[in-house]
Amino acid sequence: MDFSEALKSIKNGLYMKREGWNGKDQFVFLVPGSEFKVNRHPLLGIFEEGTDIAYRPHIDMRYQDGTIGVWLASMGDIMADDWISCEKWQY
Image 1 (cartoon, helix red, strand yellow):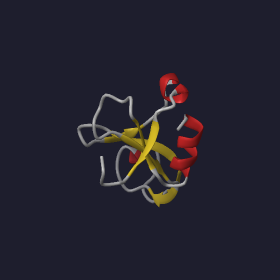
Image 2 (image 1 turned 30 degrees about the horizontal axis):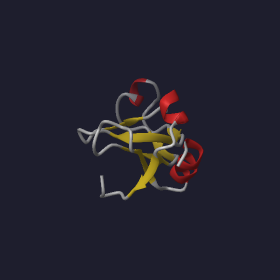
Image 3 (image 1 turned 90 degrees about the vertical axis):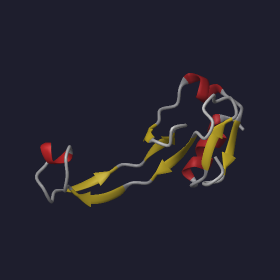
Image 4 (image 1 turned 180 degrees about the vertical axis):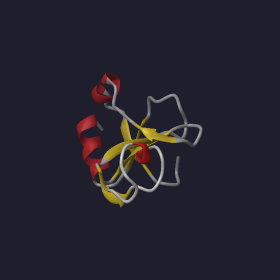
């Protein structure tokens, strides 16, 4: 599928990956927005403890080494037609 279809799938809670990615076990997923109270660094260096924070939704990637980080689509990702869905536990 193309990126627009993949993005809709991500917004609907599916885990998506590209067949062309070199890293095995990589996929992207939606982190929904949430609200919480500041209780640890680095936010304690910016806000007072207990401050209500609205955390905006974003897309994260599960990297090959098992770490998670914020993901930004490259031009190659946007133009690709090799997007596929994957199961949460089926990397």
